[in-house]
Length: 58
Image (cartoon, rainbow, N blue to C red; front, side, top):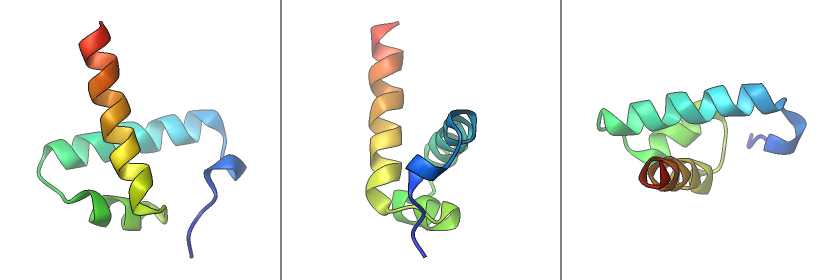
């Protein structure tokens, strides 16, 4: 079952995004990462994109 991120606390989502980006940096496929969190695959791609965008801006 896919999870609706709106029902999760902000700090929970933030921690999930951090862990997802770390796992993708280690070479795990975004589809697998998203599935392990019960989220849609686009969530993992968005998390990675936002992470890259925030790092470039700092």
